[in-house]
Image (cartoon, rainbow, N blue to C red; front, top):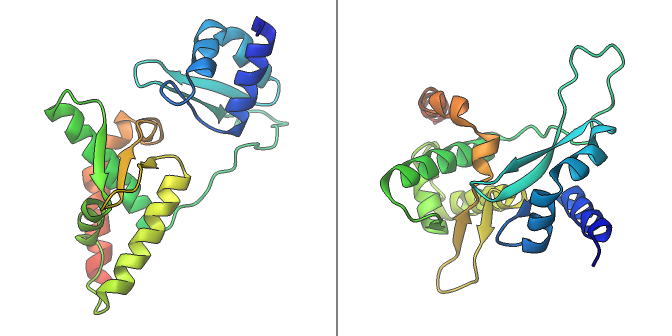
Length: 193
């Protein structure tokens, strides 16, 4: 394939979602080698290419335009997250930070049960444990749809890899506030119990 065709394929891949170094090596190499060309394609529609070479992912994000008197419409909608979905995201981000601080292993793999146990501490007690488990499972699936979890091949137990893109969504500044946020979730759980 020629360079132009490679760039076109990389642009289409980015329009579909996140490009990962390990999952999309051809597009990844093109994005690294032709960053300016790829990024310039999106600037005209109010998007910019975000690339984290160290973590191995690239994605498009909306260019902030609050000061523009005639702003472009948003192409990437903001999605409000429900309590449990946002709680799972925050807990996974915190767990990834702890993992990175304690081991050199690049991948954080968690079982569905580990995620369930982590979340359950912040959920009001319910008499129907099976219903709670199903509710948390649905929210784990939403987090996976958002690209923060990657379900691994089914074995005896469902396992997930926590994708490093969660670090971009919940950056270091946000991580500093996570303890306060988690305390708020604890209080919310206690108030609704």
